[in-house]
Image 1 (tube, rainbow, N blue to C red):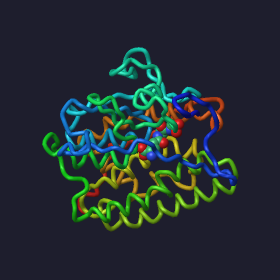
Image 2: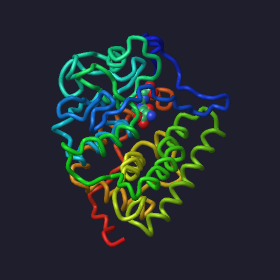
Image 3: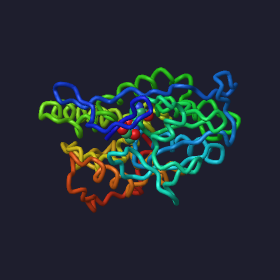
Image 4: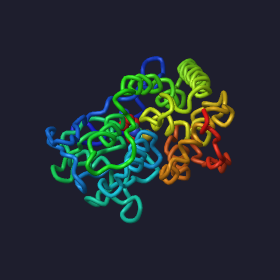
Length: 316
Ligand SMILES: N[C@@H](CCC(=O)N[C@@H](CS)C(=O)NCC(=O)O)C(=O)O
């Protein structure tokens, strides 16, 4: 792991507090694309590029919104290599993981292009404006909202944050963030028993609660799929393959929860979504990148999970 300090790369450990709890750093680029262009980043076809990692659950949300909003033609996308070592995220010289815009070798080079004095972690996703040569935003929750709402002229597909549900969606996004989306990392990167147990307990309390909720409604906010579901999905779809073993989130598996397991399959079946789930890269990233957690870097072969089993949740 490392980070940029005034445009220079510094290597170091995962940030943690005095009790050994993993501390996620705040993101730094918080601009907006707007339909009317008032922000300086107008919604235009061909203008923006999404740098993602197929392995990363935060980036995965943005790749899903791009697909389900029918924006694949309008917004280009590429992935970094799944392995993230002391140099951070890297591009390969050619092929699937190359940088299609500048041919750079590291994702940090993109950050430094945007800001020669950039300070902070070099994270995916990155929403790049080809016209201004800037990073518009690198916070997934904000990027998915922009893809959902600001590309009306170019997008197809439903509104995943309709105004009548917006407050509830925001509330659910907040509610799942700490115990679930970030909770798996807090468990996995904890460096004390107490910090790990605190995170894993909160995580499974939250999963147990959502299991109950999903017994009575098809999706987190009712009968429509929303941004909150895509945010939950990218954590749950990785859960049994990486968080259960690698991050020691092993009180239960998702397949042990009838409602959560059906819910994941329901979302997986949404047109285009299965192609965004790259389990090979997910496993490779987690098991090989976190040397302190898995020093042998052996990638487990299992578990055998079939996300295509009919979910049977239509009537809920
Ligand atoms: N708040 C960010 C978090 C993004 C994030 O932490 N991405 C991870 C990959 S899963 C990353 O790039 N980590 C590299 C690092 O922290 O150095 C978001 O939701 O977009």
